Amino acid sequence: MSRGLGEVLYLFSDVDGTLITDDGIIPDKNFEAIRRFTAEGGRFSLATGRVLVSTRALAASLGVNAPCILYNGALIYDYQTGRTLHQAFLPSSFRSDLAEIMHRFPFLRVMVALLEGNFEVGARVCQPHNPVYAKADELTKPWVKVLLVVPDRAQKRPVMQWITEILRPEGAAVTSSSDWFIEILPAGCSKGNGIRLFCGLMKAPADAVAVIGDYYNDWEMLREARHAACPMQAPDEIKKLCGDIVCPVEEGAVADYINRILKQRLPVGQ
Image 1 (cartoon, rainbow, N blue to C red):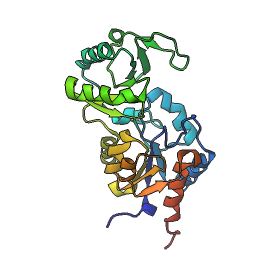
Image 2: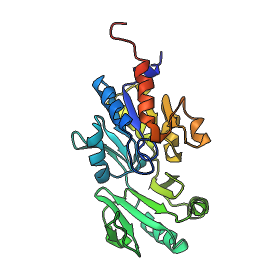
Image 3: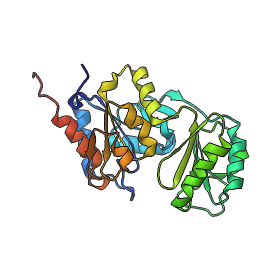
Image 4: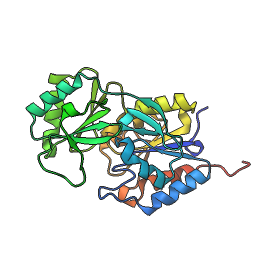
């Protein structure tokens, strides 16, 4: 017999657009609900496209107490123990593919993500929130993912189509994490695959895991999980994958889902 929502032990939350608003604010309700969930024995974690270094402080502030799925599934990392449970890298051949992408679409902002952090490639103007710049051939350590940022959301679809249908880079997968972001990951990597790997590594029953996300890079995770939720502002295609549609991110979507989980738990002894 499969577990009901009230028997969820692990909860994975997407970060941007789910836990955090577009203005970079985490509603206080989320902090309070996460504390209650973990106090009652729950294991809370993140499933995000964000990188290892920049997620560390966030995980600490939230009281994350389970390994995180980072880089949209390319890395599973336990901040509590400092252990890497799984990692994958783009093939070295993608370096020449990226050069072709940048030549074809010179308007793109390009970020290469390493384990050490994000590096903006070919930057023409210094941006204070992204202070590290480099040429692609200077980034000799393994690449975990590449983020392409379009200046106009209408440009995203044709760029993605050209990469997937014309260039077809070997050993790479293409996804989107916002209306302006195209992400290129090692083949086979996704948040959904991260959930499968997590369950195997931690010997966690699949029906003991719940997830919440809001966008197309959450698609595989929401489809994979037995218990899935999304905020009210998610696209209709994402809503169709979810058993629970919760309040908008600005009102504390993660807190709403946690409250539903805890509400269904039976009192001790029943």
